[in-house]
Length: 453
Length: 67
Image (tube, rainbow over all chains, first blue to last red; front, side, top):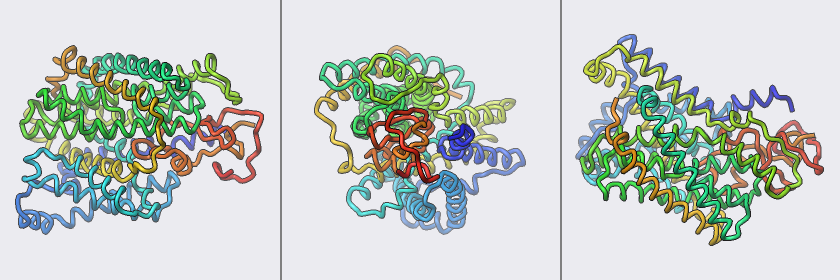
């Protein structure tokens, strides 16, 4: 196999690169329109708060063409990426139409003022709709081509970059790295040694540990390849991470609200203690909704920003380094597999989650675009014409992801974890929660409580 | 003579996702973190395309991941 083919494959077949391309394209279009005196807001339509069916009917009577245009534009962009990645296109197109319609339904329900009074976010509603459909109705398998949780969340994270000032990343990023590293190392050691104490094999112990400590399923995928894990062990680790991530979507926001944590602090705790990016964003959105309804102090943006800094900048970015370290340990100290392997420092880059580059690039572009404006000008000029359309589109793409979590979470199909694997992971969950709370709400509270542009 | 050229090496994302239940719920076989890994049908392990072993069997077709 030629190296040229590998490099081309990395670029054209990996969804990380496509999320960067799509995300930056949208940010670029939004900026060009803004700079020429226009706005992308026309195509970034989203349901507004409504109180009666007459309200709702009037909205759709007025905006139906905008929704149609938006659907076709998104369908075109995501289908182009799916085509390049070699997916089955007919299934993808039909599946995407279903994803769009169900996401719209979740947003319509979530913008009903009666539902909003209970702080039910469209994020949570989308997840619930997806889970109900997946576990109660028979869906044709080919539609799953469009249920791409990770692809949508990564694209949304790139769009999120345009609303996250680079100055905030520079200011709070190092704290996020310190906090996340403390939790990652402690949780890893607790899960690993608990698993070993319970006589689980080293490689399964390591997979459970990185799944709980670093970045969920992505860490399991990266490290499984790095240590040449058994497929069965990988399945057990994936099932453990997914199950606990879904539980934490509900538990973390409710616990944070019970202690009236400010939005930024709650977001930081979720970023420290959730296991998977997409699941954490559902929880962070839910906590942001508590802030919007004044159940806790702060703003929805603070919850999302703090979560992103902790989870993406603090934890995801180090995945390649974890993989290489464990690869060296597996090769030199653990049992032989009969497979001849080599470890290369290049693996850090090979396994690097490239969508993070898109987050930084979008943040830098948006910050530069508004660098000479006062705060007042930013709020009256930049926010409505440039930031709001990108926020609306990010909410759409995130909802595609949240819905897809539900649509792909079929409990019946998961690998049955042994009791010992469950205990080992659960021990890590408890440590993760407690340590995450101490660091977010006590040690670094002053950083997360006052995050602002 | 590496796994990437072996008939036992499965690296087609859709097949990997089918072989690991729950993978697509919060992950993806199309993610960068997978790098050039695949599943060895002989060892039933995750291996990289650059690995090798004594059970190497050359791939006959051009399509990857179709043992």
